[in-house]
Image 1 (cartoon, rainbow, N blue to C red):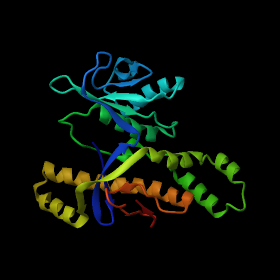
Image 2: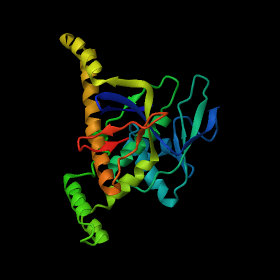
Image 3: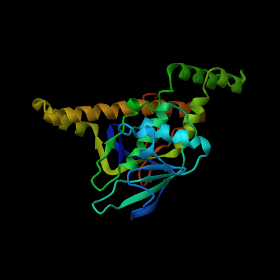
Image 4: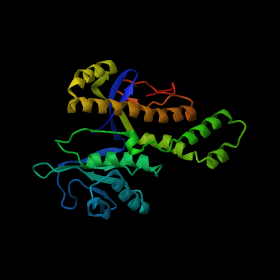
Length: 263
């Protein structure tokens, strides 16, 4: 499970992030033509490719998929780790949309790797939007140019302006976010005040627990800052708040540093 900790209106949410177009096509099975913990496209296997020479990374996974996707964007098969009986699950994953940026490919690769490493003992892993560079293409210059465009749409040639100022990638980024599910994990919301009280309790110990809580809090705040970038450009482009993070019953409003809403 890939978990996005994020600060939201005086709370910290733990949000599970997944790819939308994924279906399990084999459960507790074995296949003589497919090994466990592998990624297959056009009958080519990641584990047999030069991309897997070192430890699997989001970059190496997406390098493998993008290279073999050039001959046709076939669906991808991902097998999980095998259990003690040698059985594993098989997922069918829709080939991702055309590349928008290295950072967004890092997010896709992270989620595919999570399926590849899936096992009964698998632990949740925290998602760091900044470290992966998911929204790196939202630069200050592009934000400034996008703001100018939104205020002068009736005075300039929009298509020409977008091309000249390299803004098309921002529109593609917004569209590409439709590939993902962001769902708040049930019973995994805590107020910042309560969380901070736990941190203060452990502070005198300067222990591993204290530093882990501190790092977690920093990660949640940094993720909010990164998410705010996406929320802001979405608001400018679509003139409405971003509805991305959800619970099972209702959407959760996330107020950003730009005084916009995201969900």
